[in-house]
Amino acid sequence: MAIGPLIRDLRTARGWSQGRLASAINDAFGTGLDREYVSRWERGKITPGAFYLRCLSAVLDTPLAVLEGEMLRRTFLSDVAATAIAPVVASDLLAAGFSARLRGGPSTEEWEAKLTTYGTEYMSLGAADVQRRIAGELVAVQQQLDEPRSWSVAARLMTLYAKTFPGSDGTKAVSWYRMAADAADRSGDDEARVWVRGRAAIALGYEGAALGTADLFAAQAMAISAKPSLGLLNALYGAAHSAALRGDHDRARTLAERGQRVFDAVGSSEQTSDYAVPHWRVNVFRSLLLARLGDEAGAVAAQDAARAELPAALPRFATHLEMHRGLMLARSGDVAGGTAYARAALDALPPAKHSLTLRLLMDEVQATG
Image (cartoon, rainbow, N blue to C red):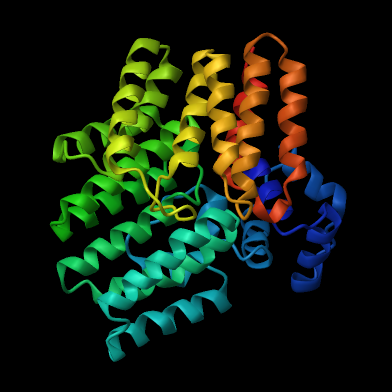
């Protein structure tokens, strides 16, 4: 993605105005930055140089690699902690990594409990908060990859971490998904191998990003095991979204029908975890898919079904459903009305709850026509 929209998203996620961001940089680095300069960054009129990228990394507590559009590498301590994170954060990550190695770190059971917590937090926290927390866990778990179950933990953490980056830039998110798949393969756990790839496929397919990679992950998941599972369910819906965006509506519907049969066999009772796919969530998948296919009646039915069971603690997903309606309006020919409807839904959600997926959905609505 362009640097301007990313700066805007990171700023608004903290509830900051452009003037507040300029003041934070001035206070920390003694610059003479003003609100208009920040505005010009966000509008793409000028691009911040290396110095200001470091300033933004520090005050927004965001890895420099995210701002520079570079791939994060697997060498967490040197490339992520030591050079890509603001100094104070890097110090904390280094300490956590060495502490995990010297003291043995959490047990596998404790890591599984952490995964459960992060799976729940992902559903309600903003991308920046999730990214910051999981970065530290990745540094720690990287020191404990001595047994297959540890690789399974690492794979699932990497998958959540990947989801905090926009798949549309074709580098960071995809790179992390690929590493997650490799880590899952080392675990020897087919359920984890399918889940990681399926989660990547639905994330990229839903976002409408890196569709070739989404298809590849989906195909790999299906090849590993045809046994009904949440990973296979995600893979099928990810491939269905990719097919819909490519204009292959018949294939999209066939995949969705197969996905529905898998859901009927393995749908979750857990309501608020990223590792679960309850009834309301599969209807969120269906809502956007049917909106993309131009099936307004089906999309509205899926939206109504999702709303009937959507937990009140997850307002971000209610925003998704409203934005799907904006997409339907835009696809019906009322691009201005659909854009306004989707924008109003997004603006009604507190900025701290925004996700990069919502931003990409807003871009899709605006680009329809």
